Length: 596
Image (cartoon, rainbow, N blue to C red; front, side, top):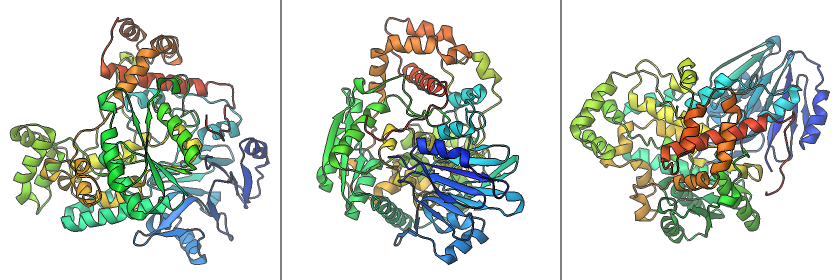
């Protein structure tokens, strides 16, 4: 089952949170800590530690170091003292894992909440008149407030237009998020936020030009150590593999650690969605069991959102099929943890851009190798050297400028799009004034993946871990210059080198990628009448967010084959399903302790 929690902090000592007892009981949460100002309700799956001398609280799993990894089951008195004296800074400096720390501020009854940079322990909050509530689920906060959720339509529209930007403010009014690597400080009637861990601390090191061999060796060591640490928390892990590089690296790390795991690959009836030949090579090479399951249209309910407990619509309907397969197989195997290679492209600086060449032309001491990087970038992007050089010169003028994600505006009201002030803010999109373009893109990619690592149905059964997103791995990758990642004209090349001896050559050198697009198109075609009803008469149309006439005209075409349009419409279906979940009579929270 999910590991959920609810933290209530009173801005005045002695205030009771008895009003939350019944809600907690309905959710399977119990009061496990009662301090002077802080109350913690949690279920049996939630790990936590409380300082016996204060209200200092840490929720989640923590590790220390990578060579070797130490599992932190209980802080020592000295560690509690350091956490207190650094106002929680030591959490990020000394440890890694999936956690949220709550540190009393002393003056005026303030509280700090610090979330780990990997983002694998969710944390949302709601400020009330004399207290602040934090939870792993936004629907719990809604129920605890006693008020019906109110949708912020402008914030929702911005989320649809810029789906890669995750803002502290959410499309549900009064519910906010402690973003990964952020610190939120709460006072009575006021909340402020700041970076607890900045990517720019590590991108600066990329200018010191690390030795390539050392960078590769450290990458391998950290991935294996972090994967092993997470695998140690389970009896048996079910790993989703595609035969692509990232999930294969996680499989190799699990095999190198000697942990018990099974691989599962999903396939569709279309060639682009059938990667079984690669997955089979991987399984044979590592000597592990591989299960193969087809994607099934009948496993998908377009009216259901797996993000209904979250304050933003980040789930995708087509993933329900894979979720169902994972849950059923995990139950049969006795697996108690899911793993994925999610985030690999982002961590390994997979940039189809000329920015790495611009970086090399800018960074002192690196220009001597620019001709080779010019060839590498041209090959990777499949452009001429003249185009690559011209593009790099343009990129040089973008030193220190924030990354701009493209807008997704298909089938949206043009008046709405014009009315938006701009994309939501995210601290990782605001670089120092002298940061190089490639590292600005790298940091932006790491911020952008956060909307794709949760909102899966399998999370209700067992934890879902993405070890490539572990803090030690990400921080090391940020210290490596962008041009090193594409040397030889191949993407993610350092990751390929790090695991070349543990993986089949066909996977190490693979350039193609599978895609679920064909399955999504099949869903579209089978469910066209339901999609038409859901969107043309839905809440998005009622609010003027979608261009109803453009959408109706497209759906009326006899054979509207347009892959981009299909995916844009399916994304709107996901938003509509999420909206309908939040529009249900409050509270709409449910307990899910079984496989559907």
